[in-house]
Length: 257
Image: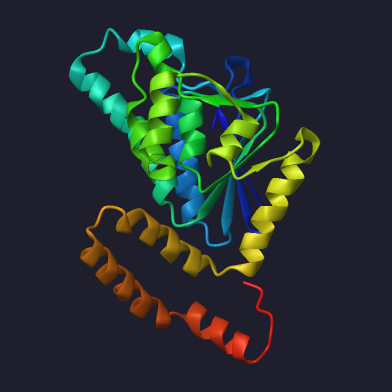
């Protein structure tokens, strides 16, 4: 790949945006490479947790504006296909059966902030700024809106999407957009330590079931959501991980997944 790097260490997969000269801006090729990388990590049995990170001073500045300018010459059908391309990436990360942690070493703006939003966890340095600035350039934060409403609720989503202002890391943590603010020199180690903790302490199968259910129940009315939850409970009880985990707990043994 030209713009995305992949490594696996101790069951932790790392996907790294590597287009620092363009502030890791997203275009069709970058999105396609990210999709391929996440597909590969999802299929790799040795990978339990994934870290999404970036090289350079900026995590991602969002859509490549030169690319967007070129797209203005496209037909509606061509632009729709391109929009589905980004939508598919966001949905893939959001629904991936493995936990994804964003390690944000610099600003995450517009589509770049959307990329962080769909991850399960997000750690960032204090200097990073965040925002969905599309309304500032006559664009719409359409796709990320679907996920941000789920993540933060309507009031916060309106504030961020309609205001279009950049916010600090401390503010992003305060409203729930970030899980932790970490000094720059400690970001990589802290993110990796957390990923290892999840990989060793938690059942990969259980995390996959839990993530799937989080995605599904929000689309259901209460009765249907509860039925789905009950069915998942029953299904998981028959899994090897559940049998092993309960047996280890009753025997007073620590299990390393």
